[in-house]
Length: 264
Image (cartoon, rainbow, N blue to C red; front, side, top):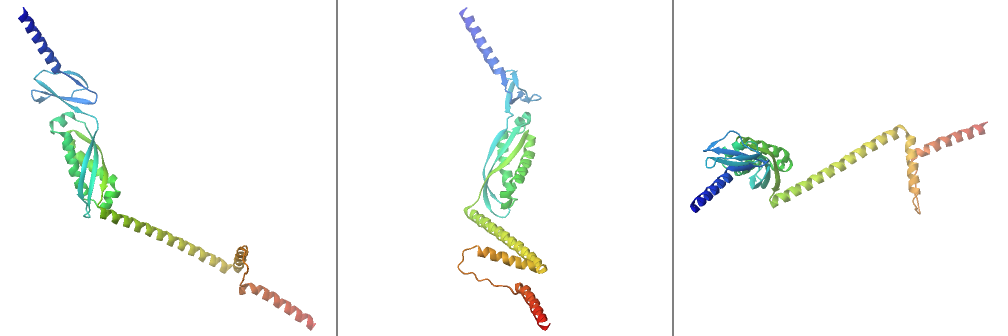
């Protein structure tokens, strides 16, 4: 009787172990790929509770969340023979769980390796200026190329971002001098443009004065007023000949009038 109880207890324990081994819970962000005697059952399962046949069935879970993959810094020789050290970040997720389990052994490692090689290949075809100023275009090129490679694995690459571009010290100094020279060039252009506009205005003012001589006299008087407002002890005022012409004409009229009266 005691032996029968022991046997029943052993059977119960074995049954419980088999039940625990056959129950699988798949979360909302997961999918389960079930292998039955080594053959994949059609479609990924989940989310929910699933019962597997012990020893016969095996479930492999895949995560559908977006994975942030850091690409280690890579030494890249650009198209203009400048050595830079570049790292990046790749955002991808599993969209076909069966392919991610069956087609590739470790999809995270495979995506990391193809991201590194693609980063070196794409940046080696670009100049240093393009690497520094056209990151958006390079990011799109990287995303497109990596996504084309990982698509058969059931992986969707959503975004690729170049993070840091580490330049050699001598190249940093060269770029600093180049930026300073560019700022000097722009400053000289702005000064020259200002002088050109001022010369144009002076030429227009000269044309106005040539057509209206009285404008010259008014401007001269205005200048005298501005100078006289300052507290100077001595003010020497040159009188242009043009201003004396009016007095000369008036003087001549007075002389002619006086001569006419004396003759009469």
